[in-house]
Image 1 (cartoon, one colour):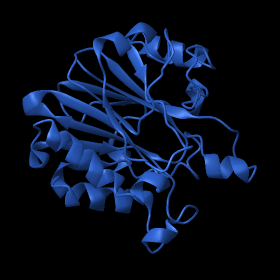
Image 2 (cartoon, one colour; image 1 turned 180 degrees about the horizontal axis):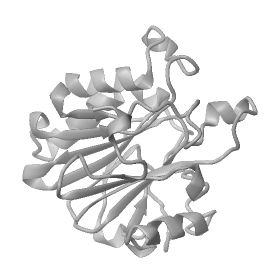
Image 3 (cartoon, rainbow, N blue to C red; image 1 turned 60 degrees about the vertical axis):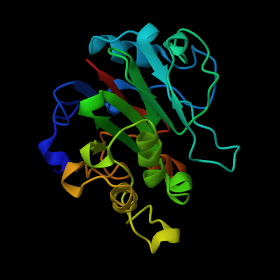
Amino acid sequence: MSGSSLQRNIIHTLHKDIDVYLSTVSDGSLRTSVTPEPRVNSNAADRYLARHGMSPKDTVLLRLAYDTDDFCTYHEVTQDEVGAGFTKPQIHKADALMTRRQNVALFLPIADCIGAVLYHPPTHTLMLSHLGRHNLKQGGGTQSVKYLAQQGVKPHEILVYLSPAAGKKYYPLFAFGNRSLHDVAAEQLQKGGILAENITIDTRDTVTDPDFFSHSAALRGEKPHGRHAIVCRIR
């Protein structure tokens, strides 16, 4: 399913039990993911959450780390961590967050990389995984599925949504024969056991699409610096 068939800001097509929200430039830059403090550039994020009936106190920031050699770190959200990154500091750094808790929103700011939503309906297991150049080089798509399998999830029953990302024209993955982030991520997910027909790819290119921020375009002075966000929750 291509991005043209998805609603611009709200995605209901993955499964009836979950909400997936994708902000655009018009919503503002929705904070940074690399600091533990709860109130860094989060006013726009708070407004965005409220607009979709969510609260910062029920939201968890997926806080990434780049000062590491391991880009395949996964974490299950505990009740004490709900609100981390918004109403309390987010201490944990990870490449994906998992939850089985209803009405706990997982929040990932991005600006070229893929925000991958993985959902297993039989066990109501939701994961939000960051898939970019660093973790794809370490098999991040496959490793995300492997982590879920270790939690008792059957990979062939997982549904996946891949957010807009930088296309191969301006952001080729040299380590994968200049293929795109979407192509490599989908291949790795399937290698982990997810069925191709269970993967929804939003093919919009963040580099060229004016609705989205792009780190690579910003470095060339073609777009302003900032991050849009993908947010998901179990209803």
